Image 1: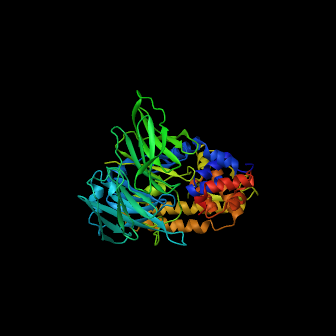
Image 2 (image 1 turned 180 degrees about the horizontal axis):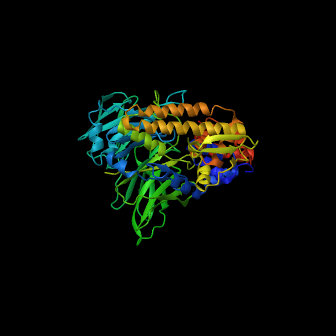
Image 3 (image 1 turned 90 degrees about the horizontal axis):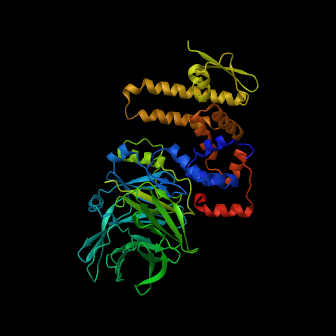
Amino acid sequence: MDHLPLDLIDNILFRLDPISVIVMQCTNKFLRTYISDPKFDSYRFSLVGSSLFYISRHAPFYVTCQENIIRSYPCYILGSCSGLLLLDIGGCFFVANPFTNRSRPLDHSGSNILYDIVTCVNKAMCVGFAVDRIQNQTKKRFKIVCIVEMQMMYGFEISNGHSWRLSETTITSSSKSDLAKRTKPVYLEGTLHWLRNDGSIIAFNPETEQACFIPSVFHQEPETELFFASDDKINRLALVSGTKEEISVYTLAENAKWALARQIKNVFMEQCELEFWSLVMYDGKRLVVREKKRNLEGVFHVYDMEANNWGVLGSTFWSSKGVTDFYKLTPSLSFVEEDEVKDNIPCYDPQASYLTAVMRSTDSPLAFGGLILVIFAYLK
Amino acid sequence: MSKKIIFESSEGESFEVDEAVALECQTIKNMIEDDCTDGGIPLANVNSATLTKVIDYCKKHVEAAAAAEANAGDKDIYGANKDIELKTWDEEFVKVDQPLLFDLMLAANFLIIPGLLDLTCKTMMRGKTVLQIREIFHIKKDYTDAEEAEVRKENAWAFE
């Protein structure tokens, strides 16, 4: 770097959007090392100030909130798929790409159940968010599916972003069990999967509107943490079950049985200091665990399933267990068809302008190997 | 009659500007506060062409700020249009060749004009390839081809 003084480099880098920062680090080794330095993130963070989403390499996602705004508009992530987020901001719904600041408001007036679901505690898992790439195009299309539980029967309400309708498809399970609370549906190979408490699964394809019941059985031991995910390497559903000492990964086999795939030792957590721990993310390659020590920030530990070792991913400000949810976000630049660029458009809808403000302050300088964790606080 | 400040470009050319305009530059503001601007301010690393542009920018933004203040009393939903007008002006302002843009960025950095620095940085980066950025910012490639391919692969999504 013979020509640019360091203070100018800072001045440039702190002004760039996340994508530009990534392009920038591809130009020069020195810059890459410089940008990768945790100090860069923390300094940048201090400059950016409070923002709703904050993603960085070393701390995958800090969340701080502009409190006064948050109070007027509680904000929730309802789903994350293919780099897009489904957001609920004060009862208005948006599909947004936090990397490109693009968002699209959704009309939910046609939905009979969406509002009820999101205003009800522990019902957020009923909303499924599915995003697919349109063939031969960079744009994507999405579907939102709300599952309705009626005893042993399930119905589905679908939206393509414009209109809502109740699918004619219903499915009846052979046993009675509730949908697992606080467990997000998993979208895999064109199908949304909802986990039930007994380990069985309700599957629904938003395109064909075909549903099926997978009678897999899983007995959750008391005092274990459970996490529903997919193994993206082999395209199979996965259940991660763990105690403070040991974590087991099960994958759903052809015969609709949960088969034990891996067993690993959990990261060492000092009992006397531990406030709580939780499973945060699994994708077949990595397993992320959050540990919260007394009077300390939460720490994310990541287990590399190939290298078989634990490492530290970062820390989070949020301390209490109940208020935080985690979303995996695979960064992408694409957006949905008929997108509407909200940036630059004067907007008088308070929720929409709030979102614009949130998106502007979104700072995601670096991807963690193409994968980013989204942590989101439920502030209710 | 407002106070005038005199800038002197690297070529020795003098530029007289209103103090209010000069105050847009944090560096100059500090100098004015320290009362060391008598006899002109020599800007040895800013040439005349760049300085002309910088002054244009500061003038416009001072005017825009004054206009916004004057209208603050009857602010309505159309208030946002003023912003758009200034944004459009900014966009036109940076439609210059890359070397001048680069000089503008250096000048904005030296004189501390956050808005202009922001504008020039973003304009210089917009839609540029890695190769172009190296050229524009005078960044040396210190990667081997293999290393570069690896970094690009890791961040492939940003090049979608």
